[in-house]
Length: 320
Image 1 (cartoon, rainbow, N blue to C red):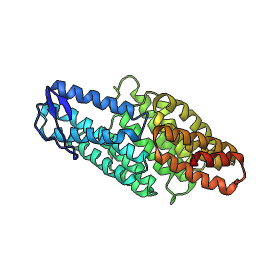
Image 2 (cartoon, rainbow, N blue to C red):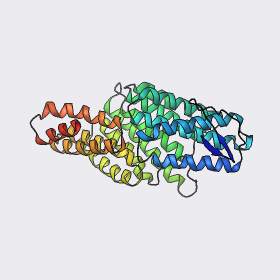
Image 3 (cartoon, helix red, strand yellow):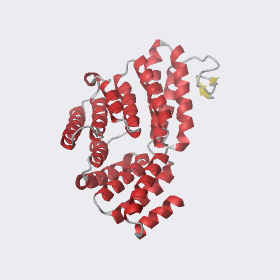
């Protein structure tokens, strides 16, 4: 239940309000503070937030239908963003099916209030989940449903970093073609953020302040996918520094990516050491998907260097 405008709002498990309540500016402000708090928490942890994100998204979705016209857009925007946060949390837990469902829900809510940035936000999440499912064609198809001309500079940057990652995973294309397409998308993302500068206010959904750090985290993953370890390793290292300030939840994934890039470059001991750090961070934020990534890397390292004490330490960290 939530206290809104002097009344108690009960919601069932589907998120539908069980009793009517008056929606006014105070109620919307309370909902906005709650949404902002969940957004901030989502940069720090994964698992403990899932139920709260789903409940809040359900509450906002239920309120949207009966909200006065004055408040429909902000309530719809918050509902879409919270559904996106739920999709992201499910992806970080390794539940791609639920991630797709919540991503689609976020896209529908954004379309209902005609917010192109949030619709793109949802579709990029869907695209990334298709990449997790090893379907890069579906990932690109999701991005092609976005009209880049209708996005803010931040929405365009968000689209392009996902496009870069999807291009880097297109196994049907030649390596140079994949690389050229990915690098061009990353350039557009940077250009969009530079053009925004101080002239374009950051939308509510933008959680990062370090624009270059944001792009660098996606560049590192694209370089790893393109199998360019000499470039990927320093890119991951820079992205890790930025994430440590703004998005702790992302750290185990970046550490895991760095470990993979080190292994691909042949430095197996360093890869195992980095993977141990990823394991500790993944358990700290309850990110099951990051643990799955490290387990896959361990299988490779164990085949290539089964007697390495660093690989054995990784084995023990995963078992602990």
